[in-house]
Image 1 (cartoon, rainbow, N blue to C red):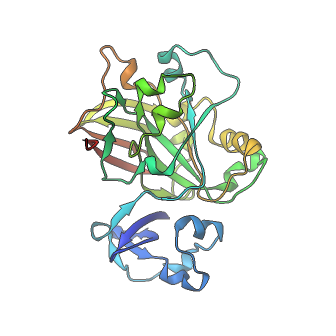
Image 2: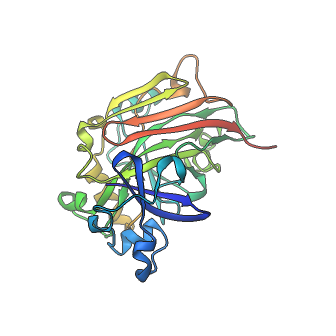
Image 3: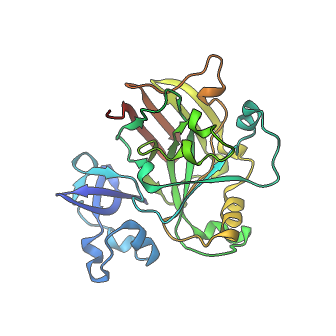
Length: 284
């Protein structure tokens, strides 16, 4: 299944994309449970195929306004330097444990919406990533049980404000300017997506390929990340793990390539979809 959050007839809601880009609005079908967000529906384990099997779509994708698949995640945990080629191009030493940092929900925009180049910087870099969305919460999740906690996968653009990211060893400032991350267009359930090791991730800028890698090249795998992160914090349904970006980022190129106003960035992942975001200037 493909789960989305969207705005329809003037209200935010959530649902599922079925054949031929039909959209089934799940909120009215779950009205008795008073679930008003996709995160709440995942928490209640309320999303079942019987809700949309054989029904007529309420709308089509071109008739709704997409939101980030999880507009209100409790946690967004990002993994840095998680592809060997990216680690090498940054000159970092090998790591025994993942490099983690956090994002805030207001940094995310949906598929089709613009990424916002901050006024404070001209070093706005692209980073295509695979996002993992948690479906069942837990603490100290065993690695061999980790995939039972995954609701699905999405495309993520972890846009990076490089000079602010470099102000200190902590990545947080350069990763949390509003509107600098793309997320979407949907969440694809594991039964409809290939295993991450069989996915290919590609990032393009204005149609030119910037990044291409098999997701099998992750240094720390999806099950390991879910297990590791859950050891220090309880994961909750709707939490997002951005698993890291491959080599080819803009600041490591010679000369560097940064996103500028008018650019269009795309992140494509095999079996998941394509996330498209234009780039605009932050209003002065």
